[in-house]
Figure (cartoon, chains in turn yellow, red):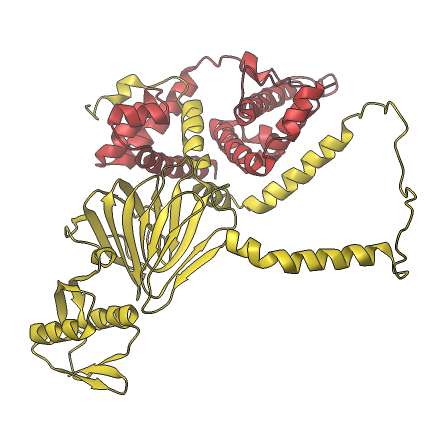
Length: 321
Length: 194
């Protein structure tokens, strides 16, 4: 398709057409709709609330058909089999509601969790209500919006998660500090730690937007591509991801031009142990390599060979010097 | 008087989700009307007013929604909003031309959206406006080929799903382009209106 000849196809009702198509693209995306309304000084929740109130007024105005028979009126007399103490009725109702709420709360909470977390040294696999599978790496928290899978599929991430998103009408949106990632159905990894964001796609297409940089700093990643950027910067142009990336989901620890400081932070999270760097310039050494994540001593030994350093056990943890 | 069956269907709609989307649509219609140089005609009504008025017209049965013909109430309401904005602009224009003592005050009876708004034949002024808009968007797209391709499809009158098929792209990518175009278009309309 030649992009230089489109003026010749100019449509007569272009503004109406643009209005409909552009609105539809926004309206199908809850986050984009909220943003678009906010740009015009409108609060989506407040708008919905005001509108609902308006509609309730309209509903009340509708004439009700005349009742065919006289309605029953409370109180209907019921014979008492047990003589309860003479508390007001609402006191019994209130007490019953409190008992039911206390009894069912743990069950409701378990059936409908809103937040998942993997502690240091642990990993966690979860099936989300929409059928998407997520695997949380160590020291990670994933929170679901209360209306997840009803009006949106929006999650907030701190840490690192591998997503297998189930296809659906609602876009799957991941919000992390400094970035928003939107997808429809795909497999990909998002890592957001220490003001650095990594997104790598194993399957499908993902849109990555930096929320703290310029508005239009959006890139599209397809299968096998990855981007790395710091919070506040625009996402770097897509690069070819290493075939083993992300290693952690298959029991590996993979690093690509990572500083020794971030490698050590990753090991601390993975093995829930303290590792100190003793020596000038150690933190800045860059590491590229892949390790089996089963034995920390083997990894430390390999790291020391790569960096020409040594390690020792120290106060229940380790030190590299 | 509204048909009880239609009333029941209206009551079962997810209004919490519909209202913000309808207001968003009305915002664009108002911006376009203002951009077309009829600011004075609609300064007294905002997008939210048009959206709520459209809902009220359907709820009171003045606008008859036929779910068999238009199953999606939002689509129908958008038509009502479009009709209301056009009617409001035209009424204001007519009021200006008429003797204020003799003018009609009834502006609650716009055309039924299903019958369509009156065909607005483009005069030389509208041609110039549209050309200005097109030139601006072409210039804005610059060297971004993907945006230019999506714009071309839009100018050809294609819908978003058809654009995705035409360009062999996933819908989220097309939507991303449309969102960017929407921002550019809104900015253009706002800048001009201000």
